[in-house]
Amino acid sequence: MDELTDKQYSWETEYEKSWEEIQEGEDGLLSAAASELQFKAKRRKMLELPANIKLGVMRHLFLIVDTSRAMDLQDLKPNRLKCTVELIKKFITDYFDQNPISQLGIITTQNGRTQKLTELSSNCQAHLTVVQNLDTKPCLGEPSLQNSIEMAARALRNVPSHASREILIIFGSLTTCDPGNILETIEVLCKASIQCSIIGLAAEVNICKTLCHQTEGIYSVVLDEQHFGGLLTQQCRPPAAKVDSEASLIKMGFPQHRMNGLPSLCMCHLNNPDSCKLSNEGYFCPQCNSKYCELPVECKTCGLTLVSAPHLARSYHHLFPLKCFSEVFLTERRNCCGCHVMLENQAYECVTCNQLFCIDCDLFIHEKLHTCPGCTASLTRLEN
Image (tube, rainbow, N blue to C red; front, top):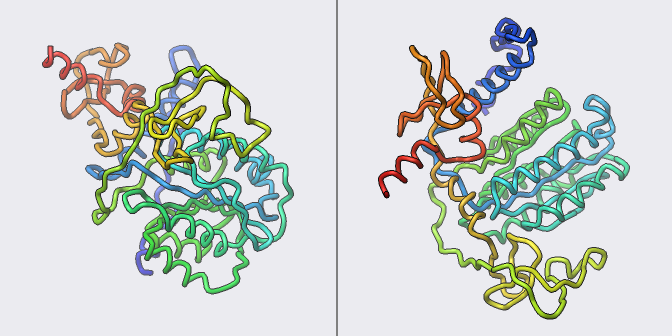
């Protein structure tokens, strides 16, 4: 527990005088300078990430949302639950954008009980549909931290060892109504290699801090709506792959989108009569010929994981993360290798190909593209 007290609190650390860095632009406005400060803050967070660490490709994450009466408070506008719902929608979209072959499940807790809204699946639209109606229900009673993580742990025990097992809790209450000793539940999480992270909406709670520390997760308390969104965005990045994780071959199918002569039902909406419609097109499993309307998905008939080539390409970069560019100061004006804008004083240099980029391209390459255009162009010239 000594490691928990070594870190300084935010009010004990030296604050940043960001207002002193704001300068008036050529057009007399401060917006350009303010946006540049935001870019620099993003870059600082990117540099804080550990380097040369291999990240996981396949993730299995349960999102637990506190819907107790504490979520009715209005310190986050219009209230905690509505603010949480809006940010969760963006989180789900970004999660599947950066982890297309991963799975997500959603659990809520109130009145000392838990409810599983969605099972672990790669169906982004199904999760968004459920979350969209989450703020229409009343916030009641107290949450149960123990019941919710036990429900998630039971489902994560069946996850293959080559995939990560994660729990992310959005916790708005300062209390928890548990039926037993939660410390025993924490030991179960540790034995099952389940990583638990918590985003608190109120104040720091000791049991939450202990839970995250022992399961090697991250515990954070939000400051405002913008900080809340930033903490959720950090959770889109996969955790570091464990050294003792087993390597195994994963059988996958690459179905083609084609037309079929006779209209039929798709397997992904078979259990939902409201959205189930007859159609004569879709993705057909190469092993059992079952039809699905979107990818990625796990075939309900034969269990084959169905993906497309772009999904694997977007997941591959997690195995070999792109190194951070080094900051350099220019003595002469140069053009950005990405957008060809004129670089005047400051640039960011790729450590491999030595090409220079502006800060916008630097963030876009590391957050979205995940490959250096200069290195790609050099390889293309060598091949030709």
